[in-house]
Image (cartoon, rainbow, N blue to C red; front, side):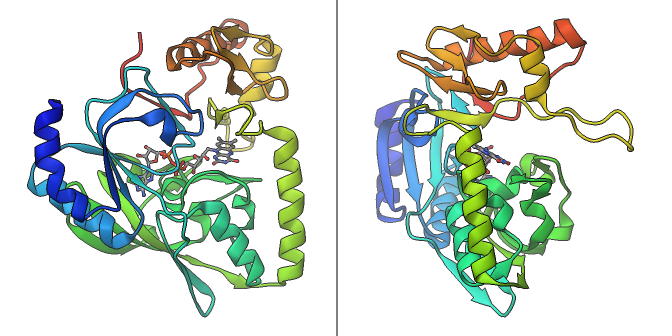
Length: 315
Ligand SMILES: Cc1cc2nc3c(=O)[nH]c(=O)nc-3n(C[C@H](O)[C@H](O)[C@H](O)COP(=O)(O)OP(=O)(O)OC[C@H]3O[C@@H](n4cnc5c(N)ncnc54)[C@H](O)[C@@H]3O)c2cc1C
């Protein structure tokens, strides 16, 4: 994309979006802190600025990609050849109505979980500590401890690639393990409501601390060892009687712990996580992920499927 043309085309958007920056390094927008530049990074923090920005881009026929907290992404070292909308907000927009909560897709998922616990509402505590936005969590059906965001989702306000807004019940979409049919739909989550039940805030906040403790022991500290969480999905059961099996176990048995390529290392405490070491590139992460899945294929004959989304060009 020619920068001069993009700059001229997007000039009016500077008055619509919360921020527009040109040739922006996407490493600033992912928890892995990896990724080259995109022609323009358009930051939208509210439902209103997101809607207006997408409508502007659609009218001008400018292709774009929408991301949230960038906690499930590896963006290539050469970056992306399209504009990126980053739908995130440091100010949570969370509104309770009886036992339901409405929230923007840009709000941090963990802030939503914490606010629900403080207000004494049960339903989202299992998402405590999961990085990223509510929008990203809904589309990827994020969760932990056998529960996921889609379980308590009630309604969605969506916008499509042409800028058309709609509102629908969650039952219009299919939610399964780390997946929703929204992923392939070309629809973006502007805001959503969840159905909660009344509980005890003290109990919920205690549970929250316990979950945070478990997560601290299991996951890298993002500030010291950037990563994108589990690289591979857990393995689907071969019969309905069986449970999903942890990919981390197979990776460990296949000798993944200790593997590294360039600056990318398998995390010492969890064989399904790659962490960024000095001079790490996205290409290193991609090659290490290939080597890890190859080791499981050779030892167990199992094909691991990537959970993290790799965007852009890799060798
Ligand atoms: C340390 C660590 C621990 C993690 N632990 C867990 C865990 O326990 N459970 C779990 O499920 N995940 C976990 N993750 C993965 C990640 O946090 C989740 O997948 C998260 O929900 C991604 O949200 P995001 O806003 O960062 O999405 P992004 O990474 O920005 O985007 C992911 C995908 O969602 C799409 N997307 C983002 N926002 C929207 C929107 N508003 N509308 C439509 N599409 C959108 C993007 O286009 C992209 O395809 C972990 C990650 C890290 C780094």
